[in-house]
Image 1 (tube, one colour):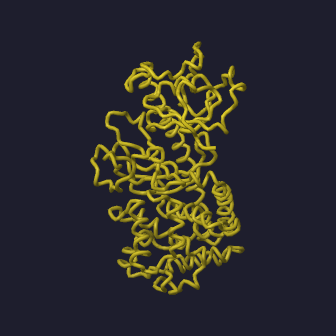
Image 2 (image 1 turned 120 degrees about the vertical axis):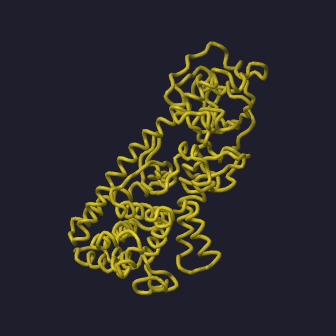
Image 3 (image 1 turned 60 degrees about the vertical axis):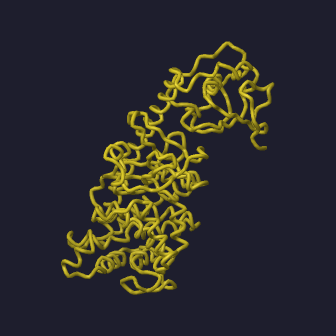
Length: 457
C-alpha cells in the first residue's frame, strides 16, 4: 500500500513512516522506517516544516504498540545516549501550534551537530579499515605478479586465492550496489600494482553487471590482474609511459610479448586469462596491437579489460597533468564511441561500466543547482543522476561535514561537473578531491560488504 498523509498528533510507536523534509533537517539514516521508541518520537517532534506520511500495511496495529517502548530503531543518529522516556501522552506529540521549535533552537542544533559528527567519525574509521585492506591486497598483488612474471605457479595460486575472496564479495547484490561507496587515500608502492588491482576489481564489477558465471569471473580476474605483468620484465624507464618506449626506440608491444611468455610457462594458467594478456590492447576496428584483431576474434573477457584499462589510464595517467576526472573519463569514452563512432571499444561493455560507476562517479566534484559545491561519494543505483554528495560548508568543521542524498532532495540536483582547478584552494582542502582513483570492496558499518572508492594525492 502507498504512503498516506499522517497528522503529527497521530504519530505513535509501531508506525512505518516517511519523512518529507530536507535531508539535513533530521538525523535519521533514512527517511523511511518504523518508529520503535520514544526517542524516535521526540526527535521527529522537533523536526521543523515536516510533512509526515505512513504505510498502514507495514505499520503495527494500535493494540500491539500502545504500551511498547523498544530501543531506538537504529536508524536515528548514532553514538548518542538514548533519550529518557517522557511522561506525556503520546497523542500529545505534534500539536500544530507554537510547540514546534525554531530551526535554530539550541536542542535541535546540538542534536543535528552530534549526529553529523558521529556519522562522519564512523565513516572515517571505516575508511581507515578500507585503506588497510587495500594495502594488504596490494601487497598480495605485488607478490603474485612477481611470481607470475617468473613463471612460478605459486603466483597463480596466490591470485586465485585473492580472487575467490573478491568474487564472493562482489557476487552479493547489496555489495555490488554499494561498492563505490567511499573515498579514501591510498599510496601504493608501485603504480603497476595499483593499476593491476584497480583494473581487476573494476573488471569483476563489470563482469557481474554483465551476469558472467562464477568461472568466467575467476578467469576474468586472473587475466585482469596479470594483464600488464610483462612490464615487470622490462627496464623501469619503459614501464610507465609510451613516451619511455619512444625515447628508448623500443616497441610498445614488448610488455604483451613478455606477458604471454610468462603465462605460457605456468602450468594450468587459464587460456581465457592468457587471451586477456594478449588482446587487451586490441580494438574492435582492427587498429589495436599487437595482432590487429577485429571484434569477432577478440574474446569477451578481453573486451571487458580493454574498456576498463582504457578508463583507468584516463583517470590515472602517469603524466599527472593529463589525468581526467572520473566523470570526464566516462564522458570522453562515451562520446568517442557513440557520437564520433570510432568503433574501437564495445558499447555494451562501456554502458555496463557507466552503470557500475554511475553518471557521476565517486570522486567527481560537482556544482549543485543551488550553486553549492560538493563531491560525489556514493551512487544511488536506482537514480544515477542523484548521488550522495559531500557538501562544502565553510562554517562547519571537517568533523561534522554534511552529506546530502540528492535522491531525497527533489528540488536539488547536479548542475555540472567541475575540475579541481575550477574551485578555490579552500574548497579543495576541505573536500580533498584526488588525482588518482581506484575501487576496492570492503565492509561498511551497519551493512554487508560495501563499495569503496580509494584515492590518493
